[in-house]
Image (cartoon, rainbow, N blue to C red; front, side, top):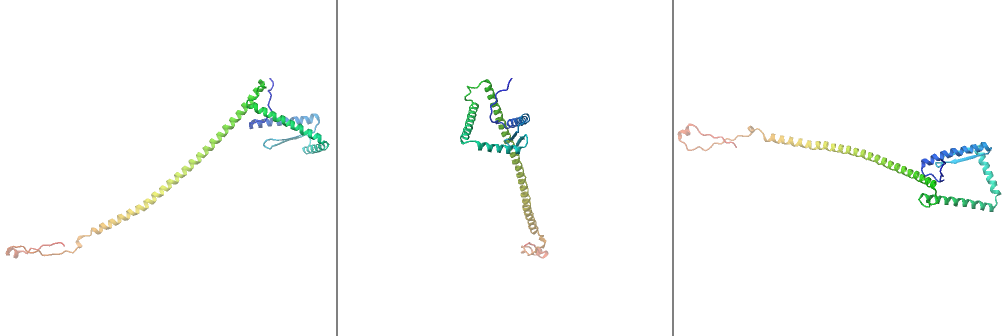
Length: 238
């Protein structure tokens, strides 16, 4: 079974694009080396990847090949007439218009338009390309979601740690307030108790040191015998 027709266009999936670049680069360099050996040709190939990586091959010396190319190109331009230059740019414009038309046609087919001229194999290839593109989009979406979830989880952990630190600080401040409360109000209670004890002591002074006043009471009407026998004395506290 032969290989299906491959639409030449940019590969959207970065992994597939890198794999295709690696394979085709090696194949191109291999073909250039075989061409130089089999046909005794002077071949130079320079490739820059999408990331800026340089890959090159030269059958002799890359510098010599570039100098020869520039010399040949300069002589070629000197030999060209204005009419030939106009024709050259006309051909270039025609090629660019054809490429633009192909790109527009591929875009419409990808969008599901103008499919009447495609056969079964072309439709199958288009379906495969769309599935690969859709798979790449889903992979990218999943990766973006996973990155966002990871970032949110990291932020949640940081917030939890900050809350724990604030909780510890609040507890420390509360403990300090309790210690200050005990110091202030504990001293005040001690002073009040001391003053109460002093006042109680002053109030409870021994009454034996107070002066005693004696006063004679008026005699009652008694008989002369009783009065002569014993005088009635009465002590009174003042």
